[in-house]
Length: 390
Image 1 (cartoon, rainbow, N blue to C red):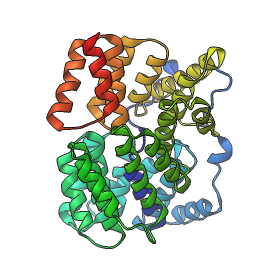
Image 2 (image 1 turned 30 degrees about the vertical axis):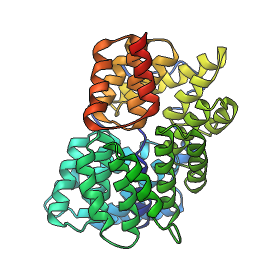
Image 3 (image 1 turned 30 degrees about the horizontal axis):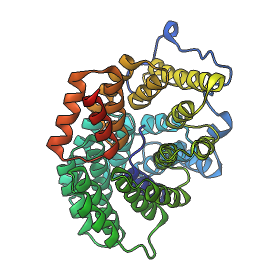
Image 4 (image 1 turned 135 degrees about the vertical axis):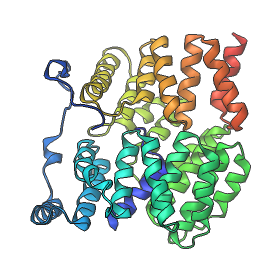
């Protein structure tokens, strides 16, 4: 989506181990014009042996809570690992009719909250998690997910409370909580304190997902404070540990591009079946007919989302519009995106779109948001300063 947030990747690993809106009418169906546009990867959609076994168990007892949890978790894990969003739809089909039943387990409702988060239904997801945590205050899985949603939405104070409780819980969750707390503190402008917290986290015997989360978070803090070279080092190490995490891959590509290493950034983005986040970045780094082709693929992807009633990638829509020189369209998408999520790429794309459109109100809004939250980012601040001088 945004990407999923990095904290969600940690939760996804834990879950693996333990259609928003109406369907479009036939006359409104989206038909890709680009012959290279991938609608679905049939090979990846074919169940593997593990999934076949779970499906067989589910068919024999489809109302059982445990099998629905196991099967939905498997669908979500494959959606992330294979970059196949259709698996989220399959998980939703299992979970949605069961999540509101009185006997629905916390595990089932937490998985459904993950699906709601994926669809950018953040208030609904957070409300469901509030309910779970009221019933079981020590449910760290639900608390991690709620903290992640709050970080994505820019509710740094709310996230800080969840992260602090995780940090105090002991074990592996304490590591996650400390990194999460550093993220929340940095959102409030306490970057030095956040860095000190990250440096205090022991990494011996840390699982790869948690270690990757720490490295990526430290990389972001370095990037926000003009240490782009240090950010690249951390992002590279994080991606080795979590090679399928597109939020880390995107951040590394952005940092490489900012350093002028366009070739390395392009190579990094050249993966099989790229997500729309990677596709838009590839278009921004391409030239001529290649840029036109990549832009068309990304635009077709976004059009297909709208036609299917999926959650829309407003961030990527804004980025694509900037690539194509459509400043007004970029600003509209960036504004709608900022209503939903306020991570570093969201702050930057709004700054770029507002500057490109020379929209005084949007520039003023972002300056005020940065001032009141204390959020610091050297790149966004530089864009706003340049816009003020022009």
